[in-house]
Image (cartoon, helix red, strand yellow):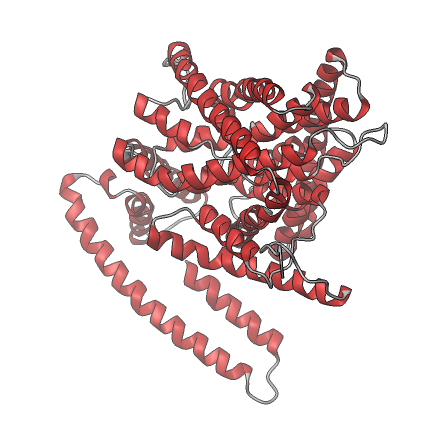
Length: 546
């Protein structure tokens, strides 16, 4: 046992390794589910808890090392995470925020990449400039999942969450293209600025084309499928298809997923397809929770790689990692202050929907929300072992350690302290604007329902009492969404009617519950047809949602 470390693993037969890997996956999935309520109770972000959980697993002797090929981590984890994130936004939101997103997702990634490359090239002996740029590119993009998962739970102003979502979704596109160009230069020993710029443009064009074509084809396929279960199943396959197809055609897989998802969010929504919408929403919430947990658990589990790399020269490596962490954090702050000022100067009343930070406090929160995550770890592990000449990739071990140090430093330190910082600065989302938007939508809902009722009255003769009742219900549709739209003298009557409807609803739910229990009892009786019973039960379930 002399010289043993927690990262030494006993040799096991191949079959046992497979079982261990499967058990490890189930442990991460279970942790992903449990971390959500535990995080809410402890007021800590679930991704941070999963990273800590992964580190704890990595330190246990009986837990095997992760045996996932690095080149598969991004294709397996990024597509569903990006697709789930895009479902919460829209193309028009991105278009409205194009300036702040470009300043963060494109310009800041370039600046961070080259600042990190300059510092790393100067500090790390034997690190050529191309490899230093690869290091800068893989640590430059804040993790989209970490930022939105952490910031979204803190009650931040919606404009900040929108900017962080936009930055997180598009910065990976820029960083991954830069990373591939730098790695190719380090492996081949040659670099052409003109060729790199052309590759960047072609990568974006190919990805956009793939995303649009695949989005259009998926929309048509959904119309043909019809069944909500099959439609939701198709949406699970589409992100992976977009990523792989774009990569095979030498485009950006991340951008391909984003364009496909934005197309489907914009054009594949049928207002009357209630079942597909409810099923899809629930399904993608589950996928998002599980994949996010596994992704950040893997970040923690990769601790053993960093420890093996640091064996014998901890001091130097920790110093280099700390320097790069300082550059990453400092550059983000130095960039955000003038970028926010410039965005405010360019902002005008005509820029409807553009989200910008309104105070220095919000800018500080944006700065501290720049956590790195699974993409940085995956890109570091995916660095080739050798160059085209057969030599070892220059300083690969050092790059992996520094990347892990940046991820761990930003994710744990910033992720754990961000709730405290938000509370200290008093940055909270104002509900006034949201209430006003909700009131306007409620008024539009009521007007649309009334307009349709008048159209029906033009072609159908309705009894006067029925027409009045339906008109009242049209008004109630809006009032239930936003009670403020009712006039003062009608609010009390509306409240009383709402109270009565709630009572009726409660009693009806109890009646439906009794009906469902009866159906489930019938399912276990001799001669019962489970398919028929499930069909009736589904009808009752849908009725319960109305």
